[in-house]
Image 1 (cartoon, rainbow, N blue to C red):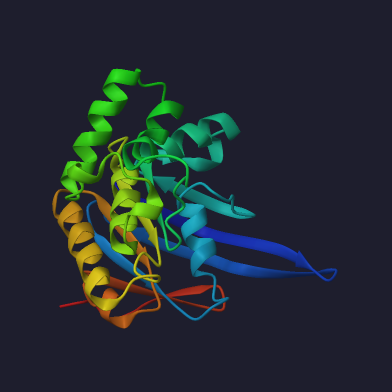
Image 2 (image 1 turned 90 degrees about the vertical axis):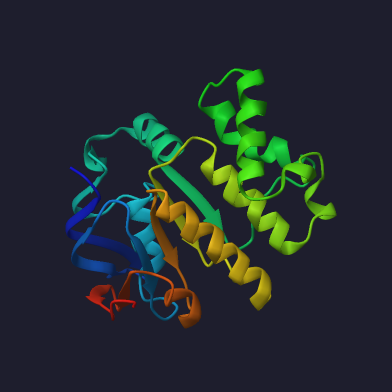
Length: 227
């Protein structure tokens, strides 16, 4: 099955002895290769939705299929491999290792994938070139600007040639100019065929998407289709 398909997905939590649904019977299909913005207020369930699509969390009930992978049928080891090979994660706080260079940070997913050292370095350098940071390969994160650190994080997300990129507030720690650069890079990756899901509070960021999904109180509804 192409794309992302959620059917009757519920994610329940226990809080203070009571159960509440962060997501409630969500039905959602996202076409392969599309650019979708996921919006909604804090606590609405949008991060839970992204975590379930990315295999970081499991639904309490319902089914999740991502590019032909039925996540309910994967054990923990298989789910880890799915995340490593299928999903590229980008976070607001960059999540770079402070004591590792840019090329070492980008190569980390390749280590977990069992790629040989020479090929790891070559692929990591290729990914850094793609985001315009080939000349910063040996710099530590504290030697890079915020925008450059986020581009290293994008390069790391690309390392294993993912079919889906999940970006959680990727411009949240950047000024408007650097944020625009990041969205332009992500949009270019989407044009190359990667399915792009961006969680954002920023309506300007959301306006770049082809489709906007709004999450409120655990329910998903269609926002406007971006022009």
